[in-house]
Image (cartoon, rainbow, N blue to C red):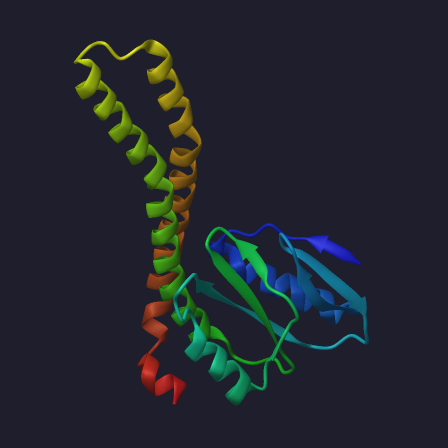
Length: 194
C-alpha cells in the first residue's frame, strides 16, 4: 500500500503517531520514495515508535540524535528519505515504546532553525525583485517604470510571501511547543547524548 503524507515541520509528531498506529494495525512502513510517498507492507501488529530527523543541505543536521537513536535505542532507519525544499527527512523505527520526549525537545530546537532558514529562503525572491525594480527606476529615471513591471513584480511576490507567512506561523507553533516542554527537560544536550 502507498500513502502520501503532507506534513509541515511543526506537526511531525502527528505523522509519527499515525505511523505507529498503522504498525499496530498491521501496516509496517517499508520505505519512503519521492515526494513523501510512504510504502507500507502487511506485517504482524507491533508496538513501535517512529522518529523523524532532519538535515539541511550542507549541515550535520541531527547527526548526534541519529547516532543516539541507533546506539542507545536500537532504532533502524527506514529505507529512503522524504524530500523537501533544501532539506531531507529521515525516518527511524524504534522497536520498543521508547520515551522520546527529550528527543522531541532537541529536535524542536533544530526545527526552529530549519523553519527560520525556510523563511529566509522565501524572502529571497521578494527582496531580489524589489532590488531589480529599484535598479530599473535608477537606470530609466524615477517615475518611468512601466505598469506591467509593477504588476509582474507584485504577482511574483505573492506566493513567496504567503510561504513566509505559513512558515512564520509554524515557527510560532514550534516556539510554543518548546516553552511547554522546557520545564520538563532538566538535562543538557551533551549529558543526554552521552
